[in-house]
Image 1 (cartoon, rainbow, N blue to C red):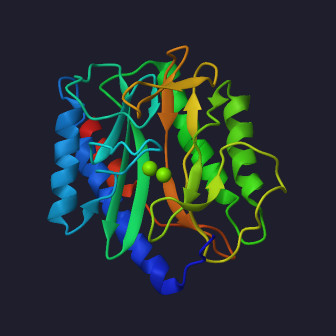
Image 2: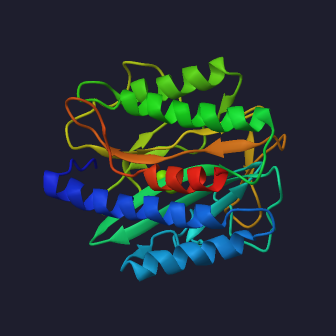
Length: 265
Ligand code: MG
Ligand code: MG
């Protein structure tokens, strides 16, 4: 079942997603060598609850009914998505994808960003830049009259042209009162195929792009998704609303950019 949202519902989704953007920026302030992913998780949870929202990820069940223990997914290096916050210490040269979801006034926000820990190699820098760029190319296709396949096709073409591979087993999704609603939004596919995009369709677009081949496995914890070849993975996500003249991006990296710019000075 696909639920198209009213303007009022989209305004509420935007509020939730802006809080996710603020939370990711708060986490970004703490990302540096020596910090543990559990510490980052605590920062996020406190920030979300201080703003009257609930971390949607906490307790979210996987297909085996195992609840996710954290408020963020903290996925380091070869972990693609769904990394469990732990005592793992970040070190110079790592990359970490932070995925965050909140529930506020009955609507969910969902967004992710992959950060550099200190200085990273030019190869990793390119993986991050190209994955982020592919997200925006996908978003460009999220216009009334286009199809779901146009989004995935744009992401896939760009990433593969740059020598990267697209993870197939995990995809984007509709978002609304539930974090995961229909339709599925793959990061690959044929243009002109799939569901027609209508005004008010709200989806999370989230390319999961890897430096090596696209094979992945899930660890025994039931959550952690890792590349088989242990090459690094990047993940960027925005929640958007399909509109007649282009997508309205509901989440934001603006607050993250402010933190990253301040860190550079
Ligand atoms: Mg997410
Ligand atoms: Mg998502």
